[in-house]
Length: 377
Image: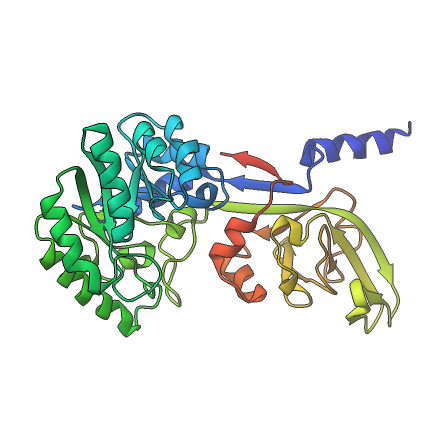
């Protein structure tokens, strides 16, 4: 085999291990973000929202690091997530399920020491029955709808629930909570409306602690903190507040490998349906990731990647497994088979990519696929 070819193949193997690129997850930055958020809410405690596999970054690695930082409360959305996570954490960690109980989950939930967030009178009755069947108290959180109309006990059922809490001692209520719908927007009147409603709930359940602030709520005001805040996106480097400097560090870097380069003449159509046509001779590169890897199709002819700090626009439609970029701004030969370009990193944040895709950072982060080589550092 030609020595130059051997050298190139060895470099490619070392570079990506056969994967489409590198997804680097900075656990040290994650730890600093947690510490920053915990300091912001002190003397309240900071929990961690680790649903959807810790926003796509790997719940096992993320929760281990957060536990080492002192986090003891971990929120997931679905019961199956809690079942997977519970045995991976020490006994003094609390795993809580935001969606609460589904019929038939009560036994496993009690057996495994998982804490449901009760969202309705029906869920309360399910959990109370499980407690009676086992002859012991079972822990829970109580969620109230304060204006989002998504999850939580509605206002008209609060009095009935208060009666059940008072009469039925089989459930140990750890705290009451609600979720802020517009905390990322400091100008939204909905924040104050929800705080006022949460204060009414707290007055109706005066013996119980309050868990209220999400990532954005942490930076609204201390009145939103309660005794336990539960940041999510901010842990992972996403901006908690729109239009404000991001107070946390980026946690994720994504670099994707080049599959092919070429030079095409003016008038060349690119990608599915030929939606982009070159206006002059153009140097192109195709990279090994697409919408199956979490880079939305809506980035077509809108988004970009970077190399050496230079913006390289996406041209044509994003495919399932590949994206074509215009690399004419780079020196000839700068990119070749196996070269890496920056999708997320110092020149392009989660918010930048989300803006170009017409979506939010949460969707970008949770959509990053498993065909990348994942590196934890």
